[in-house]
Structure formats: structure tokens, C-alpha cells
Length: 415
Ligand SMILES: NC(=O)c1ccc[n+]([C@@H]2O[C@H](COP(=O)([O-])OP(=O)(O)OC[C@H]3O[C@@H](n4cnc5c(N)ncnc54)[C@H](OP(=O)(O)O)[C@@H]3O)[C@@H](O)[C@H]2O)c1
Image (cartoon, rainbow, N blue to C red; front, side, top):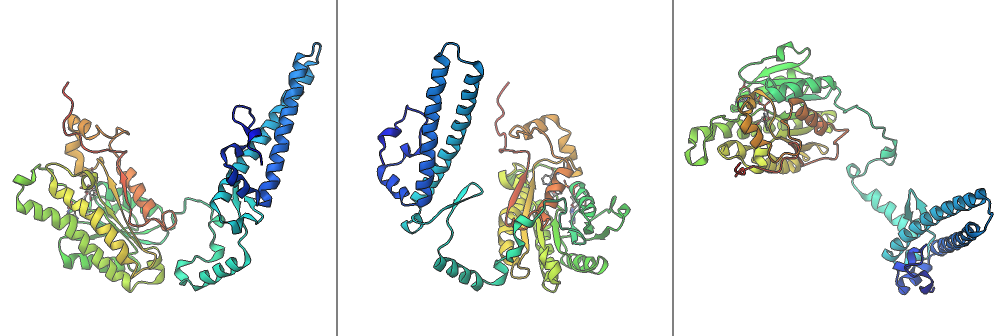
């Protein structure tokens, strides 16, 4: 092949101007490439003829306007066909250059805009053997192809037992309502006051102080007894944010230990009791099993004067999630563990702090969405990540739901 008739500057081009001579020879071994190259060249030639005819028609005095328009239309159509063919040829050349000589001589098929080679018989058979040798749970049945899946608003949580901790609080209550709407069997945990929970029909409300191991064990036991069997989805939502600000240097050990007990030991006890219950649960319960922790931007960026809180959230997001995702599958092979980490949310926990306008402005200084989240913003993400249908292959992730926050504003510019 001669590269000289494909010089840049004399459009329309063929993609081959980008290929070295060796690469062109490499591609030409493929029958598909040769055939398509011939088509592209013929098209290019036709483009040139029509272009000449059009130029002549335009220069001819008394030429019919209609004739010129027809030529222009034809030229446009040919150019567009040529561009498509040229792009396809370019993609094919790239694929051929990446592939070994074995594939070169094969006919190539254009499927869904991608070039595909039918596997040679020996390799195809070897692949079938390899697939057959894989443990069953690694290979979805061939008729479960995603192409048959129709996207719907079915979260796959109908009749799934979901336990939400700290459910009387801002995010917790919204989460309970949403799971209930999605058809889940919801157990709502509270600590000091049940708040609105008793008014929610068919939601089972149970009390426990999560710092107490016996109380947590009883919570999981009672949930199973009163709400149709073991818990399948655990939402570890409860938490405290001591509103009084102490840097580590001045923080009392008592405060530190209490925050640890509620925000970290509590989740540990809950996960332990949950996993023990999961051991003897049915396959159906195991199939939808998952744990969702509620982390915080404090766990990612730290939070000056709230180091106790920040440390517990980091431990959940970056210690518990990646550890438990690897442990839980020994009990339930499809079970998942993730966390949802909000920035500021308008709930009772943050109510007093969010009344301080200067504080809110500072807190949002690195947040492009420039707003505090609503509890519903967070609850929806919790439901999505807990859904075995929408997030069935999402595991070990920490999802920041913080409006795009980039960090803390330490030194605001002076006015
Ligand atoms: N609001 C925000 O800006 C924000 C931001 C990032 C992350 N988060 C996280 O989101 C989660 C929910 O927060 P929220 O804003 O909805 O707070 P909230 O309204 O204060 O709710 C927190 C819940 O945790 C419960 N709780 C506290 N101590 C407990 C204990 N010892 N045992 C059992 N439960 C206990 C509380 O119950 P009692 O009051 O009865 O003790 C309360 O219902 C928390 O993990 C929080 O850290 C919140």
C-alpha cells in the first residue's frame, strides 16, 4: 500500500495516514480489513468525483439551481458515509494492531459498534471447560444475563427484615419510613425515647443502649422473635456528636470513652450479634444480607474540637467496612458491607450548631452544592446501597453524601 496518496492536507483522509507501513501490512492480512478498506477508498473516490462535478456545476453559467442543490446533497451524504466507514476502519486497525497474528487472518464481525472475533474452536472449547470448572457461586447462570433485566423501582427489599439503629433520630426516622415504603419488615431501635416510632404502623420499635452487650444481644433476639425471623439488613445509624467543643489537648477521658462506647463499641456489638444471628439464618435471609454504617465527613477530613467523634467515624468507614466485607462472606456469600457518610444534615443532632449562620457558611465553604442535606437525602442513599437489586455488586465502599465537600476551611480570607 502506498502512503503517499493519503497525505494530510488533502481531505478527505483515510485513517491509514496514521499507520506506519508495517502496521498497514499487518492489518491487510485480515480479509475484513481489506474489504472495508476497498469500500472506504471507493467512497472517497466518489466524494472527489462529486466534488468536481459540483464545482463545475457552480461555475457553469445558467446551471439549474436544483441541479447544484442535488449535487450538494449527494456530496453531504457521501461524506457522512465515508466518515463512518473511515472511523470503523480506524477502530478495526487499532484492534488488529493490538491482536496477535492468529486473529489477523480471521473474519472480524462488527457487533454493537465493536469489532469482535469469533473464538477459534480449540480456544472456545477450552474456555467452556474452564467455566465449567469454576465453583457454581462465581458463575451466574447463563440465562441470568443482564440484557433480560428491566430497570424498575423495585429495590428488592420487599419483606426483607431491616433493623435501623438510632431510629427515633433525624436520619433514622426518615430511613425507617423509607424502608417501610419499600415493603421491608422494619425493626426500629431507639435509646432514651421512642419519639414518633410507636405511631408507625407495622414497624416494630425496640429499646436498647448500644453500649451494653446484653442489651444489644437482646435487641437482635427480640427483633427476630417479633418481626418474622433474623435481621437481614443492619443499618448502624445511631451515634452521638458531643456538641461541646474540646480539642484533644483538653478533652476529658470520660468524654472520649463515652463517644467510643456509643459510636464504635456499639457498632461492634451490633455487628457481632447480627452476624451470629445470620449464621443460622435461611438462605433467603443471607441472600439479601448487608450492613450499612453511617460515617461522616468528620471521618474523612477530621474535625477540630471533635476528635473523639471523627476518630469513631474513621474507624467505621476505613476499619470496619473493609474488614467486615471480607469476614461476612464466610457466613453469607452474597452479603455486603458499605458505609454512607454525610456532611452536615438538618437533624436534631446538628440543630443548635446549624442555627449559627457564620458556622454554616464556613462549613459549606468547600461544598459546591452550597446546602445542608435533608435527612431524606441520606435515607435515600442508605436504601440504594442496601438494595440487593440496585447495589448487588457494590461492596466495601464508603459513599460520601456531602454535596461534593472538599475539606475544611481553616483560615478564612480576611475581609
Ligand atoms: N446530622 C448530621 O449533621 C450528621 C452528619 C454526619 C453524620 N451523621 C451521623 O448520622 C447518624 C444519625 O444522626 P442524626 O443526625 O440523625 O442524629 P440524631 O437525630 O441525634 O439521632 C441519633 C440517634 O442515636 C441514638 N443514640 C445515642 N446514644 C445512643 C446509645 N447509647 N444507644 C443507642 N442509641 C443511641 C439517639 O437516641 P437517644 O437520643 O435516645 O440517645 C438518637 O436517636 C449518626 O451516626 C451521626 O453521627 C449526622
